[in-house]
Length: 343
Image 1 (cartoon, rainbow, N blue to C red):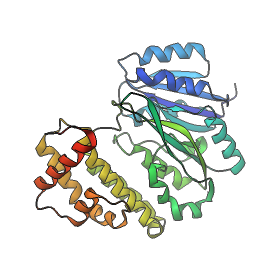
Image 2: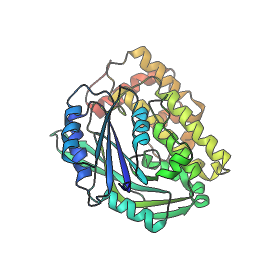
Image 3: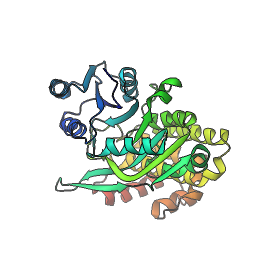
Image 4: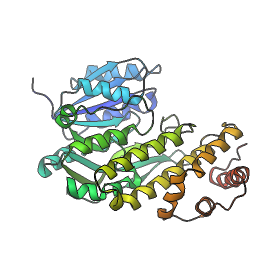
């Protein structure tokens, strides 16, 4: 039996509400030469039953169950069982456009690129639970390695470079260079995987069209919510990106893009502590906030931050007397954002 052109890997955990839509979006692809690898990462809801149902319907589906672990462990498990010439990932609560695999594969063959990246759409629910979408697009472009490295941090905008699910990878680049997800971290594992891949890739292609739909309406998503270690994790991640750019001699050509995005990331961490985490103790939240504001890279990054507003001014020029004062201001600010005052 010939190996499929594409192995699409999905790690699954407690997503029964969204899973069928995602699986069906893969089975509805105009491109048919693929295998769908479903890795149940220890679900206790109805996800296992859904996977078994679809496995019986389509022989292209491989279904595996493992004990609960990080999403990185699930993806590594899927990579070990992938037989395709190319690798693609999808999060279990997301879905893809019907032409995604075809357009990614065609672009790869025509451009002879090692990494294909497309735009994506973020899906939200409004107050009436109606879906709406925000596009995150990129320009159609093909780069050699030298060309790409000189501007790669540009693709940190909208986290285009960070994610693995809007990309098509050559399986032999992954296998021949021993590229795996770091199972010791629970955030930013995507960008670290991508950096390792980029080190070993030689050509890069971008597709403008937003072919992947990133579900931001899932309140249980592991990418949402507050974790006290997020600041350290993100700081370490950006340090690794900086070190890589320094090693390649291209940090200065990427500095503005990278540090702007670092500021965006820090602002999102601030927002998580107020918008999604009303049960976080005040003392913990203030220590978390202080660790962000006092970080030397946060202050440096604000020099490149192009957005303006109350929070930017407050953080940039430190017009606060204490962290308690800052916390009080943020509480009021985010009250108007989310309509609910936290303690």
